[in-house]
Figure 1 (cartoon, rainbow, N blue to C red):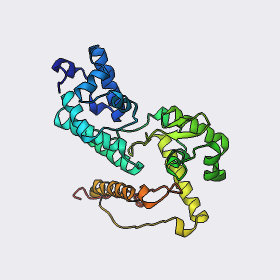
Figure 2: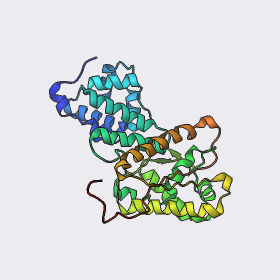
Figure 3: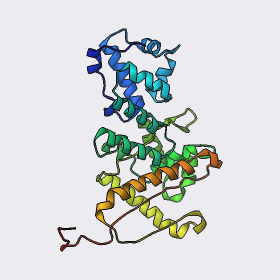
Length: 294
């Protein structure tokens, strides 16, 4: 398998600048064609030992994810170094994740690999502002329920009287505009397999508004949902601030393991959309007389 010229490689898109494999691969394909007219997808397919370029088209559209072997071929062709190749592999793992929790965990990992303290797969604030209602992720997850009917009527029925028909119509339309859903001719929607997540470090008002809404749903669930269908647990204890990072890492690990075990089809048909929320907050304010020796 040949690889691209050193001069061309230096002008190639940097994998660490992308939030999904599809976006990276599409940018690479566009860059190759611009760099040299012979670098078409058909040429690339030949270099990757593929009989057809159809699979590469699916890669660029986000319809398929490459195998580990194919990733190694792509990395070799683009002359990626070991760190870049590893980033590419984690990027695909994140895109292939089957739950929000796992995707966010891998997004955090990508942020660390990139050397920045933020999620690599986040919606731009102006886009997130259009879907910052608590029910948007719920609507998206309904595609994984038994039947997967994402019609306005079905979604409105499942969300109850908290959300109006007009709000559901707007939500489905916005999710479609963002490439998260595809509207079919019969008026129903299909999930594209892409997902939305926001950085846990964002202080944007829209993100905080979203979390407040879910806290309100949790409060309502205390009275409206039977105790055998919802769980509330709490634990109050003295804690050292020096261990905040350790605590956060443990929460992320738990969230990922929880999702892998329970957000899977192996447990049978899924009938409801649930939300797992974890808050770890101080109940005391900082002491003004805290010793500088602590």
